[in-house]
Image (cartoon, rainbow, N blue to C red; front, side, top):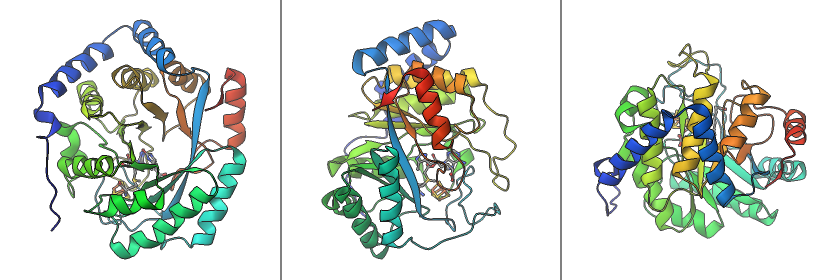
Length: 325
Ligand code: SAM
Ligand code: DTB
Ligand code: SF4
């Protein structure tokens, strides 16, 4: 068993969380234009509003995951048609990273469908991180829960960011995932932070949560101290065979509000407009950029599902006068 020292009580117990949640609920309830004005003002204070950073994702180990995340096409227990694949050979990862760099991505994110890496899994990933760094790109990994010492190994290989999402509000979490708890996620984030890497942590909306629960997710993220450098906001991509297929989709305005509240509560973080862009029209994406989103996944595939192709994104950025971040 791992031992980790919990320096803080769970964030949910802290008065800071309660105050942030109250603030988030108040922001969500503002008239749309007032909320967007406030979010855009915060965005301009800290960022160039005409720049969006691009990260490209690669699934380095696909499917067959033992966890039960209700949204995920890679969980072995759901029949989604995703074919399981072993860890990708190093040469293929280098090829994909080189292509991403040639397309203009500045960060390469490698995702694995693990509960967490075993030591024998981690070693080849460390080699992948070193090779991505040699290309002059930022490197990010999302490999599940980390055990003692693993964050330090990733840091020493040169990893810049580790992605691990809180996914939803603590009170809704048990409806979506039962095989790991909220505190496990907070512990992994502490390990990443303590090792000195940048934290990438966000969540998914459109899971059937209430507005109050969306506020709770953002308040949890904002109560991390320091706040995550990168906050991916995913809109559920519904995949046939997962328990959440058929969930009522979130109205576009509610998704834009979520981005805006994230921007206001975490004014210095990069807010990534993440999964769900393929199903989103250009006008909604443009509103997300106005509301403070300043990072995207770039390239035709996320991990197993589709993402807008590069030509569509380039046309959108051209129309909006947005430059690479
Ligand atoms: N297995 C690792 C883990 O769970 O931490 C890493 C990969 S996992 C696919 C990374 C994140 O992708 C999840 O935390 C979730 O937020 C997001 N995700 C997975 N399936 C999704 C879906 N169908 N729609 C939107 N986001 C999704
Ligand atoms: C994140 O927050 N979203 C990305 C990344 N981090 C790893 C993953 C989205 C996955 C969408 C479903 C799929 O393609 O399998
Ligand atoms: Fe596994 Fe990650 Fe998918 Fe959960 S989100 S089932 S841990 S791959």
